[in-house]
Image (tube, rainbow, N blue to C red; front, side, top):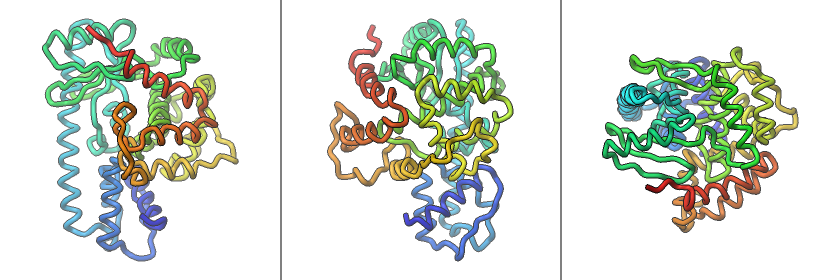
Length: 367
């Protein structure tokens, strides 16, 4: 996609994300242009967001009818999937509550509720975190039900429940440096009194305190950028959360969390992308980023990689080593991303690959 069409893509993304604005172009897009936009929207899992922009476009600027119909069918599928997922979240939360657990809903459908139309945000799975010894109790409960539980890397497990992919996470945050784990645990405890609730279905589901929800979503983005990549959907999540919580968080406290976990410099890059490319008002960023901040290189990596780095055509012909990753040229990509992100989040750049492989081979629960 050329630079001009890329800019139009971001215009459409901003219009859909905030549900306002108008498309400014010199001539209408042709069918080939729209096909490229559709393909890139899918690769970044933001087709639901861009679909929201169509009602703000003049008649001469809307996609061809055949593509609109194809797009509408896809949106209908996304809506149905999200509705089913919400029903499972409500059902599971009730089930866990009945055995004395109160899990925290992470990312995904929890973040979707801050969109104008939550059903148009694509969500791949349901993520739960269990405080104290809840993870072990929930694991036993699921296994006792006869479900096929797979203990996986990153100190997690997954299984299928009523047709939905479910993950449980031992650790609340995706940062892996052992130097900050005590601080992360103490911070999570300190913010327990600020935890909130979302109504999903007819059930009140627990979520993190605003500062920690932002920190969790953003550190999750960093985790994937350090490895193989992250698409634009999660950046939209971050923008929507900042917009919603801008007057409900303590900016100094949030900045301190970023600083003490060693990712503040990287957070400045993130904030610039949210403002310059996704249209988040600068006033809704909790603290200023330096004028010298230049996130252009990071946006380029995000753009090429797509959702979790699966769409990066630069590595399409690379060899796959399953011991490292299912991504082509996995070792080369890890090394390149280490060099890119070390200046901005050195602890994570060093320790994440180490802990990733530890959790993959040695840190998995075994009965």
